[in-house]
Length: 81
Image (cartoon, rainbow, N blue to C red):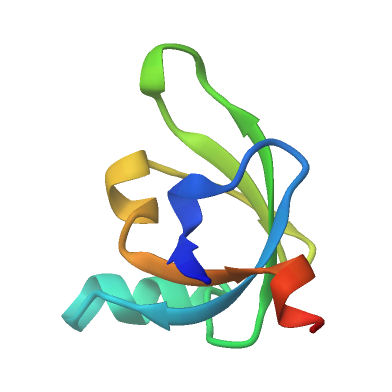
């Protein structure tokens, strides 16, 4: 079942399936490692619905939940089936 990055809880992993952005934001996220097939792990959620930190390709990056909802993922346990 496909979902989006904002659905991952702390310590959960997923594999990126798509970026639903265009233009500069899409290019910048891809430069940071958010590319289809990359594994991403949710690390920590800021209080009161703030940014979430994610580890991807050895780097920690914080994203707003509104941006994370535009990154499609497949949970890692489902990707291994």
